[in-house]
Image (cartoon, helix red, strand yellow):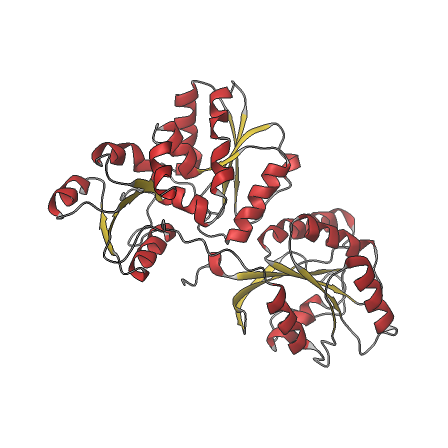
Length: 398
């Protein structure tokens, strides 16, 4: 498995100020990773630390500000902490006292976002009535409770063991359709344009090649211009052609109809998201009116390019198809906003999510569906606007 951020386990460390969140991180890794201070509010913004944590493997710890931070700046810090929870696969709710409104607030967020969490009672070397406090959390929150002392490193190994037990077991959904077998030819059409990183392939292309090799099949990579010659040279039809979404119209024309064709982003819709949700409302495009708001969401932050797929090409294709003047709003990065702040969204269009874990992507999809906002991904909308959605979805139904 590739060691990119989309395959790490993200662990959020949350709680009130000065309960020992940073100390807990240092104790878990047995290193001075986070700044520890007796001054409340030392951690001012979410801090991300990528490490190896056995037996879990590669993890990213999200060290968040105290949820009881005060003042106007404190409110903004709390909001940033809450947004960071969209990345979390699991969470630790750290406390040093009986439950307060803040622990209840965090518990409600984690339950709403379906983030498994453990309650960690810290400072057991200093506080009284630990067993009574533990029972209050067990009765009111119905979650695992672990008592620790970061100062003396009591119960830290046990906490790590419980962490491994609450990590959700994802359904292992492969990127490639199941019908790709040993010795099959899979033809990858990779446009070389301003959106491609110089000297490198983008992550979905790399992941596809790796999975083809794992199945002992044969990957062949070509440009759009080289597609006809490759099809003419090989002795048998490829079992599948996969292309970048923005080239789908041309590749559809060049690929015989008896050859399976799809896009990297369509494959990602199933691999990283929920293909049923990401396709069921695509026809809302037919009902768009002048001034309707379209929300375009990118899972990573990057400098917009001259021919940026999300900010330039998709808006242009949508307005050309609908013949309407639409209002586009853009969100980028792994932090996810409070969507209730963005009003009257008629359609959300998410990228393929190659830098996100499947849990992150599903949490975003669920947040949109809770607000009854139709959502598709780049590959679905591009194939639809070019009239080839049925063809690109067909390989997933075989």
